[in-house]
Image 1 (cartoon, rainbow, N blue to C red):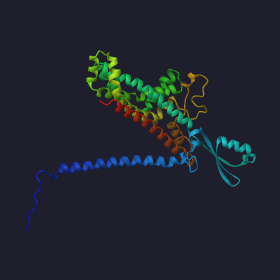
Image 2 (tube, helix red, strand yellow; image 1 turned 30 degrees about the vertical axis):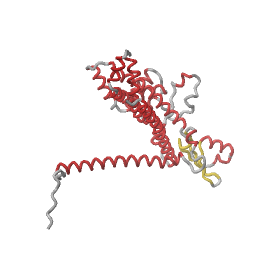
Image 3 (cartoon, rainbow, N blue to C red; image 1 turned 180 degrees about the vertical axis):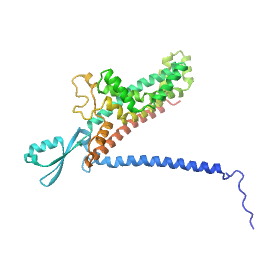
Image 4 (cartoon, rainbow, N blue to C red; image 1 turned 45 degrees about the vertical axis):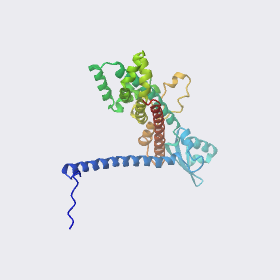
Length: 348
């Protein structure tokens, strides 16, 4: 008769603590999978429903009207036994060519025809302008805090204030921008007001990430440069900033994702529900900065909550959301590619 196998001396023995740890592990894992599943379900819904507005079965297989025209009202009616759906311009031309159509019963749906080209232009301008301001101010502030400022109560207070600002709701920044830039500076609802409001909103993230990137650069780079006779600023510009740029661009990626998706700040400072002219259709160059624009997140908000909902508005909602996600992904991917290029270039 064979003797029972002896357990290995180093084999883990089941205990209450180990069972609790394993249970906690699977709970955390299940929660992670649940969050990923919910996020994937949301994105899949937007992609599936939004692609119906963006793509079409006929060549060129892309709904160019949706990308090149402004939002219009949709007119739905029956004419000579055929159901017709025409945008505002096409409907007027149709009535001019067919006078007998004036008596036809017509139903109209606001913002359910045309495209979102002015919204795309406005969103790109808001993101590029605000991120440019945020990166310039944020990197300068990070350089001062990390390279020049001496650690003390005042500097620690500033860092604490920066961290607290990162948690302020976006609606507060919107009201701040409305009070300061729109009313006090008298910039009105304009690109400039939106740029500075969004830049200040994302500034804490940029400053914190940029400062951490500067701290990650070895001190030997600074000491070697100073030992060779370089000035403080030459050392920062030539031996510190290039190696910190990948981390700074990482902060820009986070900032882009937040700036592009905000509705509350631009609602008070930069966005119009509808605007006939494009941003560059101005008499003077300075007028470009002091005009409001249409924007994708605000357009989604208006179409989703401010007008009667129906099957036609749903197409615009999901189509706009789909294009919006693509634009944010494109800008973020560009930043990631640039960051990786700089990281490979300045490896130490």
